[in-house]
Image (cartoon, rainbow, N blue to C red; front, side):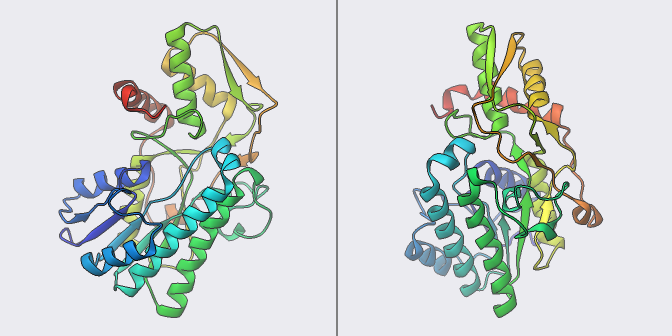
Length: 313
């Protein structure tokens, strides 16, 4: 990697984008182009055009997106599909037209069918219906993958797509109305411990299985793949192991120090029964994650405790 290359990290204040920035800075990259959403609204085509025309980034990490858990996806379907389509369309097109050398698009494991084979290979994309609770976000992300493939096919634009599993880590969203399952559990158990509650309610049956990857591992994979991968085919990025939500809740309770009982609210949706990525192709490229789940959750909990006052209510 050219450490002086002009690198645009779109979404640098988010969970993934901030981790990519940390990884690039650790690598010695000194010319990072960073804009907050207030400084550059990626949904605004004219604003994105002006930015690319003026800055002409050589590399682009497209980590900006509207994201959320089951409740947020189910409550705001129009926002999720509109904002994500606008962001990725504007950035991918501007990057091509202003001669960006390479773009990395962050997709999501939710692009795969609800009842995909487990573990899910990249080849199962578009082979069945999506999980209804997040199909709006998933459809937008699928469109992003296809747009990258189309620009590569028609214009020979070097755009790669990585499909990460569920991420967590420092900088996560701990808002109980919009967060994903792991940060939501951390906050729930922490506040229950503070109140000395006897019980914590967990959404769903506890039986669905999920895979989790620490965001610093994902950032490491993104930098690794930006340097070494150049293909139209999307590439899964995950740990290759999963855990039942019930087991995850018990693990989080143990790490937080909550000693009460767990109650599973079966009236709430479970989502996809299982989401485990097939990472055979990624492993063949020589990359493996380094942060085990227990260690990663403990470090994330420590970060949450230190930054409680900053968390969105």
